[in-house]
Image (tube, rainbow, N blue to C red; front, side):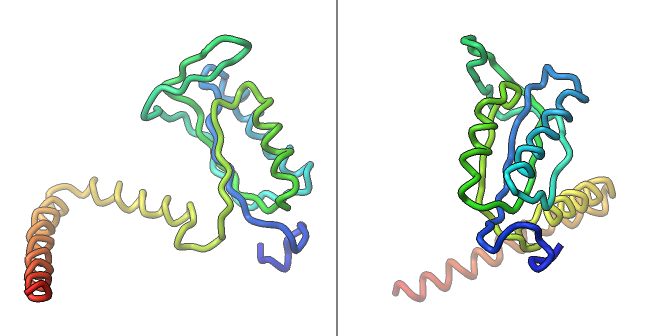
Length: 167
């Protein structure tokens, strides 16, 4: 959807909201929480541009969240994201809704721009390419063994250039 086709006003900014949902919820309940989050955005005159399907992931570290007075510990959770256009004045309302939702473990808002270089579509394509390369076997492992040599030679060239400059 081009900027001319957007339903929001000219004052709208592009935001991305990333969040973790409680892993003890059934998958359909987690999807309902995700739908509710998108509903809060659209009810506040926001426009959902892109979204990522929920995926249950393992966290790098334990996240502790106080739920109904008890510290709950989470080592995994459903991860989802949504990119949307909205005016900055409604972001506080959306944050309040996220804070009030006990199923949301953690979230982050990022003001962003929509370009292919930083898009999630590009990251997904790169991840697919990496998976394809690793499944090709020995052919790729030979290429990887040559890569450090090229890196070392370019490092030597940089070191020589630095030596010349500092003399």
